[in-house]
Length: 337
Ligand SMILES: [Zn+2]
Image (cartoon, rainbow, N blue to C red; front, side, top):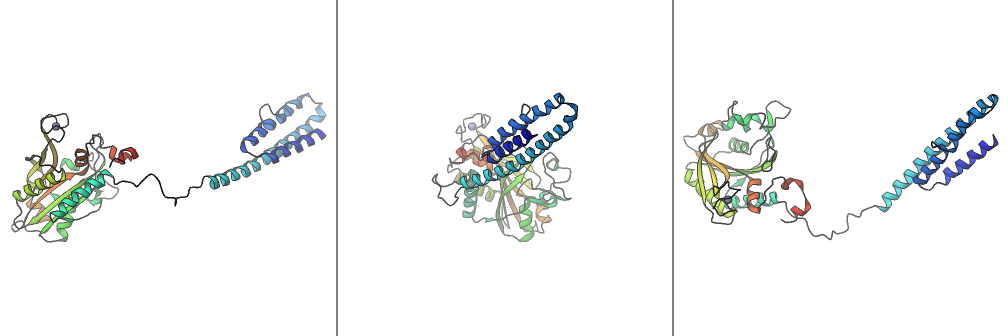
């Protein structure tokens, strides 16, 4: 029994003097481990005379509990010390000037700024709208009927509230602007849009710039002038531009705008699928129904509208072949801009 008392004092002394969590773990296995002293003592019980077994067993179990408690207390104490030391030693002074140079603007931001600057120079205002939009503004009032494929669940992110969605294009900002102001209107709307699309050239979130001009004599020639002027300024090149008949529910007539392929100089390559042309935006004369929906008399006013993908223009402008690079925030990619 005296040996047990000595063992207890020795063990408690060891625990008390432990100066690291690792040392404490060694002490724990020395006494309580599978081959530890206490464990072997418990195995000895069966060799004792029957009348001594009960008392001896109780003493050893008490000792075991005492040591477990002491170990637990010491472990908490050492953990606390460890944390305090880490906080003191690994402290970072955020006020020290960074020596790696300045950050850079994101290529999408640069592209948006470039687009906005050119249109501002032509007298366009910049309008904004919410990203969670009314289904009515995103579809109905733009002459997109309920059975139109663009409304398909596969394309549109609906939100958990009847009548709302994540806008699939920046066109609802046209509606908001026309409801708010009578013509003349000459605006662009840059912003984020959302579609269920995900591959090397499509992302579920991307950026568009929408444009709208409404006045008493807006016509196709004006539209052609504005868009050609924009594209030549944007690419800083006198590149060929062509308009190709197309269809959109909210414009009539409608067209897609192509530019001569920048990669192959219109000779034909993989990027332009050997055609020598790259599609860069959609446009058209505003459908009279859309004007009417917004309380603008189509007998007096007419308008043209256009929309472009910012990532698409940025990829062509900077020569980037994977849209994902814009969202990964790899510092080596971003530093090039
Ligand atoms: Zn090409």
